Length: 129
Image (cartoon, helix red, strand yellow):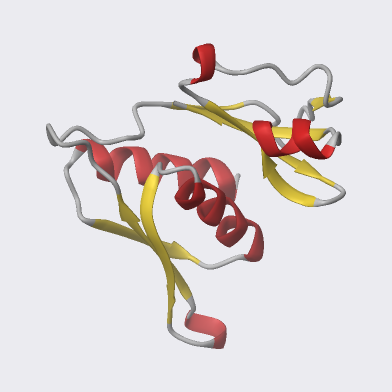
């Protein structure tokens, strides 16, 4: 029922299975989230396949030199049944800087560091480490 949770589960499971890439149905919010993950090094590349009705989002996974996936875990914070909002002063670094919080703001979907720099808060979508 929750497309963002499904996307995170697909990426986590594909990384655990050592897959090269994973595909799921395209949406603008999923594309923006995947671009944030690529910008911060959690995934290698983001692309789209197909046109109009059959459009898919393809995410190429990133691995460490030892072969472990860069995404170890994630947790959905704001759910469709219970929304969680934070101001930019309340957004703190996750796992002493080794994780990331993804926030949807009036300026778009941002990582925690970008939200603090832009001094905007919003709905906390998920955390990833």
